[in-house]
Image (cartoon, rainbow, N blue to C red; front, side, top):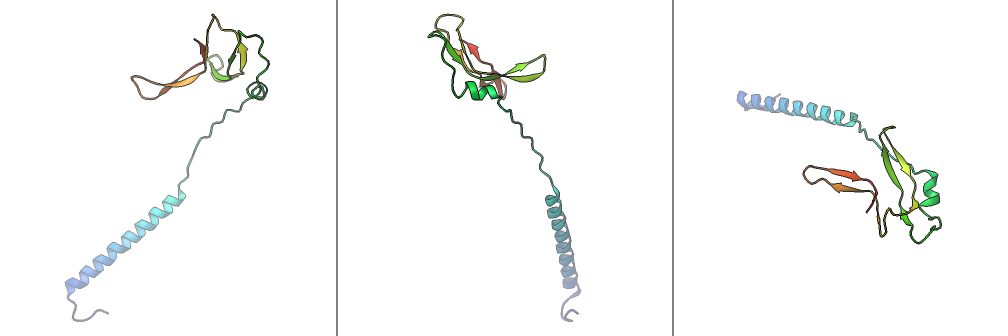
Length: 123
């Protein structure tokens, strides 16, 4: 089996190394088997635009007067229903002369991490 010239300590070291490699092989196989069994779970949320988008946003209806301003489409929070509702784009009269419509947008928080939604409003 082993050469008679090998010392017992050398044989013991070889057996120990063989055991270590065997344990590493078993652990590696277990790790790769577990990795294959993992499942990725993701959430894909899509807000589908209603038919009003096709009618109003792509082709604006005729402007009623020179004073009217286009108010773009928007999703607004309805606290009563606890849900977002689609508000179609439309021509609107500014509340005062020279008023501008500011579309809804995200703004970075000044003293905390993250962003917050600023709904569309007249300026």
